[in-house]
Image 1 (cartoon, helix red, strand yellow):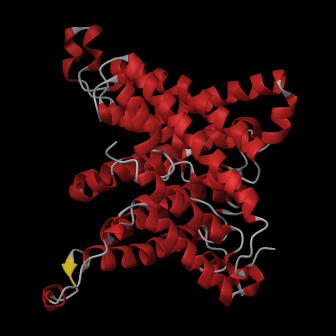
Image 2: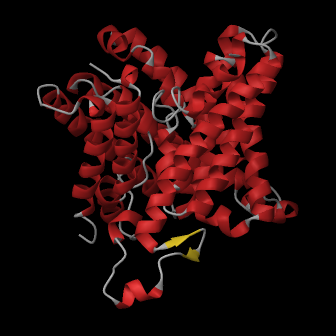
Length: 204
Length: 203
């Protein structure tokens, strides 16, 4: 990863795009991309959850879980390494935050709530969200700003991918595709081709 | 008949090709056969045991908090698998990086718990979980076979394509190693599967 904030931001949107480079969040990506409006809503929800959860997980990781992270408590905890717990804690943070988000959306925007329906609870098990937290842990960002920017980049990248794919899919309805390839098959192939297009941005 | 029901996930109810579950991790680990096989086994183990445990607990978990309970149990199993791989297969666990941890959010595990384990007895749930994991591993194996053979000319890290091919101008297809080809190969597998089983075609 580059060092400046802007390069992290653009890298996480384009070259390290969650969908095309790491295949994260594919399940909801394929399931919810039937029309542009719904996919935009889900993209926004994913962005929002990412921007909240990744910094929270960053702080937890830095001050509780990393090897030697508990030093601020007492010198005795110098060698404590709780990083094997990170998975359970990250997923618990994500699950509770999505629960809160669901309540907020239900209260303030019933149209969005109706549109997203059963997919909101699925955000809790959307691999893009957990994956972003885990990558954040691997990159060892120096401070909170970096992790927030990284989360925003990942979220926007994911939204970009799903909205573009939904737009293509709306067009695909009218095209003449071999019968066995209809639906899921062509969806995979289209995503592969989009991934190749995104690869052209590598090294920018 | 009973056997046929449990073998469904291998073909007509395959988690990746038909149920569209667990696609996320399926693609990133398939550049070589070895990590793909390890990943398939890990998912089958986690899926089988999480189904077994949750099926045993199914009458005691309150409906409202079940998602959290499921996540914690699956997370514990994934941590065990992760630590096991780190201890005995360190190089492969480095290669798989975060994708072992991501088994936790693999929709196959959660999907089978919700759809099967919470309403069936422990032993059938265990077999169902295992069968789905194996069906997932099977697709991984096929995809990684083609990607490794065409992309690096090797299988299980052994050279398969003879040196004389290379000296006559044969080249590895570098694109196969890159992520997008995994999607296209799965697309082609679906194409073949659906031409054989016409009832799976979409309108």
